[in-house]
Every structure is written in C-alpha cells, then in structure tokens.
Image (cartoon, rainbow, N blue to C red; front, side, top):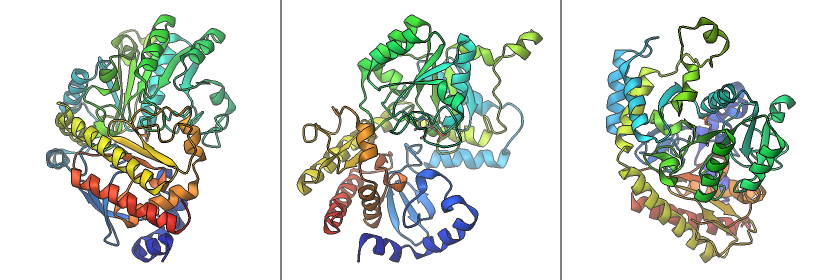
Length: 454
Ligand SMILES: Cc1ncc(COP(=O)(O)O)c(C=O)c1O
C-alpha cells in the first residue's frame, strides 16, 4: 500500500466529514494551514502531548495549537480556571479583575510592557501596533522583513513568500502594498538605505526570531535595528506572537537584551484560547487613553475595540497559563527537547543520505527536505548559515513535504498542516516522545525512499 492509500484506508470517518465539510466550508477547513491532500483529518480530543482523530488514530502533537500550547493540551490548573470562570459568566460587557491581573503579570514579565491592550488574534495586534506607530510619528510607511509573517490583513501579507513582489493573497489594494517597504532579514544596511530614501517611515516591524524557524536568529542584527530605529525616531515593533513566553518568560527581548517600543503577543497568552495584546511604552500606548479633552478624544486618539477583547473566560485561561510559565522552567525543558529533536532528526537525514536539514532554535524546528543549501552538512540545525532559507523553503518540493507529512501521520506524529514542516514542542512531551518522533521520521523517510519521493 502506498503512503496515500494507507492514509485513506485508516481515516475513513475523516473522509466522510470532509465530504460534508466541503459543501459548507471552502476546502472543508477552518484555516489555510489545515489543508491536507487527499483530505484533512478531523480531531476528536486532545490531552497532554497527544490528540486523537475521529478514526481513533493517536498522534503526538507537534503542531501544539499552532504554537500556542507551550504546555500541551489541557493543563489541569488552566482547565480549572476556565471551568470556574465559565460558571461565573462568559462576557460581562464590563471590566473585571482577571484581565487586570493578567496585564500586571505581563508588565512584570516583559521588559517593553508598560501598558497592555487586549484583542483576539496576532493579526489584530499587529494592525493596532502599526496604527499606534503611525499615530505617534505622524508617518505612514512600514519597514518589514522579507519572509516575516505578521498576520493576514492587507499589509501583513506583503513580502512573506517568494516572489516577494506578489502578496500572499489576492484582494490586496496596491495602496496597502505601497505602504510596506521590504528589507532583507539580517541586512541592516538595507534598512538604513530605506530610511535614507524615505522620510515617511513610521515603524520597523520584525519577528525578532527570524520567524522562529525559517530565517536564522541573529541577536546582533536585532541590536543593530534597535540602534537605528532609536537614532532615527522610528517606532520598533517586536512581533513576539510566537516567541513571547514560548522562548522564555521575558520573550526574545529578555534573551537578547533589546527593548522595543511596542510588542505584540498572541498564541501563548491565551493559554490556547483566543487572546492577543499590544504592549509597550506608556507614551505610545497612551494614545489609546481617553482624556478630558473631547477634541483630542475625537481627532487625536487611537481607537481599539473588539466585542471579545479581554473576555473573562479567555483571561482566566491566559492568567493560569502565564503563571505556569513565569519561572521559565517549562521553556528551559522544551528548549532542551528542541535540541534533542533537531539533533536526532538531522542524524536520520544523514543516515538516509537525503539532502536536507532540520533547522530551528529554542522549542521550534522545521524540516527542509530535498533542497540544496550550500551549507548542507556544515550546519548543526541550530546555527543556520543558509543565505536565504525562506527561498529554499519555498522551493523545497511540495510533493516531498506533503508525502512526509502523511507518512509522519501514519507513524503517529502531526506537525504544521499541509506539511510545511514546522514543529512546536510542548512541555507535556517526554524525552521518550521525542525518541518516538525521531523514530517516526526514520520510518517515514524509508517509505518516502520506497516511493522514490526523496
Ligand atoms: C509571528 C506571527 N505573527 C502574527 C501571526 C498572526 O497571528 P494570528 O494567527 O493569531 O492572527 C502569526 C501566526 O502564526 C505569527 O506566527
């Protein structure tokens, strides 16, 4: 039986849901990243480091709620906090202490956080952060880095995937694209040139991790961007949607020792429920505040709303979650698992003599198979020297990635949908689980070779 035949054979209930879903949902899915050929699988429950699909297949979950579930599924104290709050009301349309306690904890943990504003998604948080930067500077343009993803709104989809001139989506007005200036990741000279050529720059937005797993993490580059933006009076936004509280309790900013003006947070701060925030320096965040000056409130204030902003159930989850992450112990543990996973998977690649690598930092990993990086074999999976991983990533054959994902599913492991190859570790995983994943990878590559895909 081929990989695809076995997938179909062992996921018949999922297939029948997919047939129904295709009639009422585009491609039968809720999110682009959950698109799998020949059809996606549908999950019934998750617990700890695992989830089970409706056909009863058990999976080690390295997708971890798109990276949100740093502690795995359903940590007991978070379940208790949510269950308790659900009985006390879903939505008060009023302020409550839970979101205040959470804000106090975020301010305590994150160097750049002096004030906090909540919303639901990372996309929204980045939209608001950019609006704040524009309002603060009175300027329009945004410098972002090729390959960095900040969300799916009009300006967010510019410059994410090669060819960078084409946004990730259609339906994006040219005017939005003109407001975004692209620089190469790790190229501060290009940022300086853009600033020299434009006097209308409001902010630089960056995922300081180098988008966590696609581009190399470079503390010196981050420091240089801070120096430049400070010098030029440009707002620096760190998108720590993935890294905030995953890489460590003080974010990448705590690790590198660089404080941006604004930071966006999502994923982890809701403990797996939808919550995001813009946090930052008081003199910028105060643009959202009301004053007694009605004229200023109407014409010189940044608005931020959202029916579910700071929802009490979600705040209860976030607060319980961040309390578990505050001492950094879970992050140290998953970072150690990350090193173990990348090392083991790279050894498997070597054993099979396949071109490719598994690259990443901290508790993330991403597999790049059948590509021709000039540094292959010289890389330890941690300190990538590849000049343009994003380009290689986009060029890495979809067929290989898809087949590998299906094969890994057959071997009991899930990671980012559609087989992009991204893995997020969580603290419910054991070292034995990591060994199982490495073994599953070994088995999967054997099958890929049998089908002459790799
Ligand atoms: C770095 C980064 N920023 C922003 C976003 C968008 O967040 P959301 O999916 O919550 O809108 C993502 C999503 O994966 C992300 O990885």
